[in-house]
Length: 413
Image 1: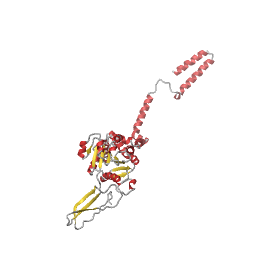
Image 2: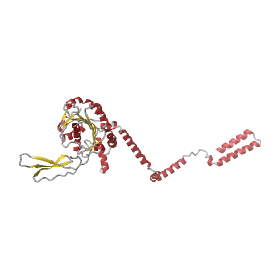
Image 3: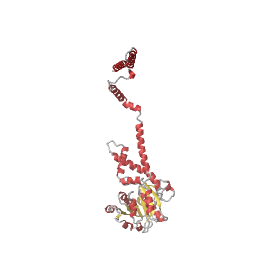
Image 4: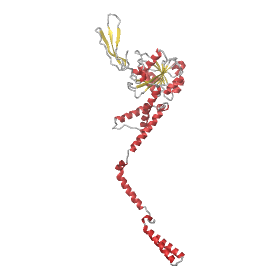
């Protein structure tokens, strides 16, 4: 049995009567290499023997659920599938190239006319979904946007498809399309929810090592149905993807903390208008690349990640709290000692200038403060005492009073 993970290949040396035809023939790209020898005999026929030996190892899955069975991801002899791509935009074309490259028959349908592009890629384009479904594809791949998924599903004439058709979605959220497919699809249809966690930008040159998440939501019994599902997954495994099997709910929880946060930071930095400089660091180059990758995606995708993933709001609030907390920590570290070191001399000069100005602003015509002028109070007291003496010597009461008021007024003046 041949394992699909990276293994060490042990080839047998050819017998003396065997002559090598080709040195190395790639059986599974980047995974296994085999050597073929032709046994030359006196008979007119030629027999080709393929010998390959590999070490047993676990399947190339990351999640614990994928290790429950030792069944390989796809058959050793891959078969051609007839795959219909509904939504032939950038991402649909991106996937169709890989399907064609691996020898599968690809059909396509989209609201826009991509017939010229499809012809260049070796894809049969159908402007009418009824005509597409009458071709009876074995697999239907939904490559629509998140926001238009339900509308597109309602327009598919499922009655024209085979009863056991496998329907696959590749949306960036998983619980939302899973529920839609379970609601609208006939119960005989198979459902496979997937998410290639890369796109035309990040997977432009290679898919090796890039994560591909999938959940076998509903796969009917029978060897054909299981083999067909495995063969479709094998397309991505042969391209070198890191296959990760997990439930749709787990995917959305993880994706909110990774993909949604990544898109959020990329769009924030895009509005920040980062620009390249002659002294870019590696970290700054990473930020520029992040902006470039996220800016290539439509805002509808970003809005869909937020709208149709119930975990996105929590992550957005956490980002906001983290930014506010960072600002408080920065401003909180400006201690009084640091302020005095920076502004202490200036603050001292400013206080002395302000103090002098305050003293100059005191009105000259105001009476002196009682607290600082006890002599004036004593003088008033003595004047009142003299007035009382005049009254006691027989001066009229009114005269004494007038005299007292006169003296008091003069004293005040």
